[in-house]
Image (cartoon, rainbow over all chains, first blue to last red):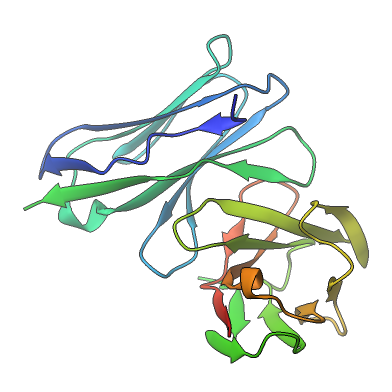
Length: 110
Length: 112
């Protein structure tokens, strides 16, 4: 079983839709959970950062962590064409090494 | 907004040659990292650097790789004898005491 699993998509939605992106993981020692956005040929950009279980909201973005199910989600409300990118989940046990998911490619159609 | 700066943006090198990838992390950050992303694959951890020494490294980071912080601002990754499979995007990142990194735009390394 892979340490972090993420559906690569692509996911195509109309402008204004609510987008749901998800990752599952197998290592119960993960405590820090991040979502990054990556545009083509650019470095990942941190969107959301959560410690342990719970929800966190920032503008149109909501991150959820369910440690009992080993499942994390990112919701994007009122999606815009500028949200079209690859979204990477990432996790860390508290050490120096962060494990990334494969990324989900999102297309938001105008 | 503070940035992590990487140079060059693209480097082409012959197999067996040495390359040095350069990074200027954000000035008040304490933790520095190199990650790489082979085309179409995951972002993979290479090495972390804290307090002027390597704090953790992956299995990928073998004797062909080394890192240095030669002065107060630069952070470099050296690959001594490049192989075809070293072709990838190499990302430098830095952070404060938390786990949310700021990444640079990357150096695309092409080994021919």
